[in-house]
Length: 299
Image (cartoon, rainbow, N blue to C red; front, top):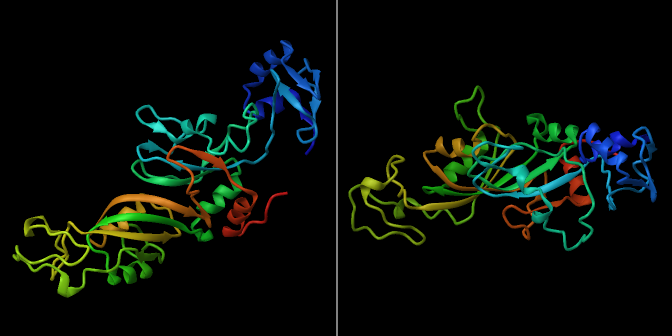
């Protein structure tokens, strides 16, 4: 990487604006390879030079890649007037691997942005990066990047639904959804002989099913399927339409009660992360993202 002015270097590392970092230079708080640097035009090599601010080493990383376990109840944005935003979780206090890398005095670039969005009530894997080309390619429908979700759905998801998802669904858009892979995790227990008959208050529920009176059932035709039954499914899609997963199930007469993204582009949510925690992607995971969208790896 070519040498650059130290004021630009400091600004790109997220230390502050050009005017703010000039004040740091004047105060003698910036050093290059152990020597105080006061002039903003001083050239530094971002790779080979050791730059410190108030004794804290600066890590210049042209591109950063982060996974965040987005909690439900926060918006996918940098800031929001009413709700907590995902970017507010990226402080060192939420860094899951801080124990593995104790030098948390190191500054990093702050121009990360989410790769796509998750709804307010959806939790799970959210990738963030300042690699604009990768982010754009991962979100492009033509790239066919897999996004996999775990969901709890009100109503009995059947093999008929599996086939419908595989063929594509009409959800009110110009075109049907692309084929999606739907996997039933708790079994298609709603076989015809186990379904409730209309008006049958004393029929015994099948294994794994919960009885509910006829007036509370969600009618999907004959025979009726009990609304109290909760299906657990895994769904893989290659698009990112507005509320897409919820609308896909609504088109089949069912309602998503809980939704969690568990993987994107072949990178899985770290099971050790708790909601609100984050960590940097490994080199292997970054490579997997490039492979998933057909891009050559930078560098």
